Length: 85
Image 1 (tube, rainbow, N blue to C red):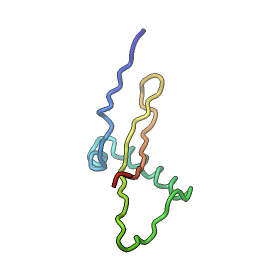
Image 2: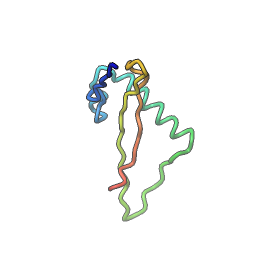
Image 3: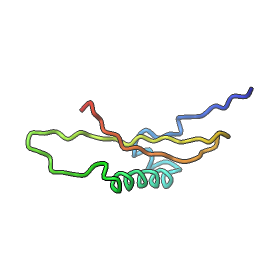
């Protein structure tokens, strides 16, 4: 039985890496799709920050989804809250 190896190092860790990488346009499309989905589904909305409060920061997480043949199926971006802040 053959085993396929996937190089996860091709997944960027920061937005800066996304913008400088060779697949920048594909990642930008994935980010825009996620943002549009959040807005359309009313997942969250911006509100004024109450006095004395600190905002919860967020970050983008990037994953490459591979098909059964090991090829790239699509690029996925998630916007996640940093709940520890």
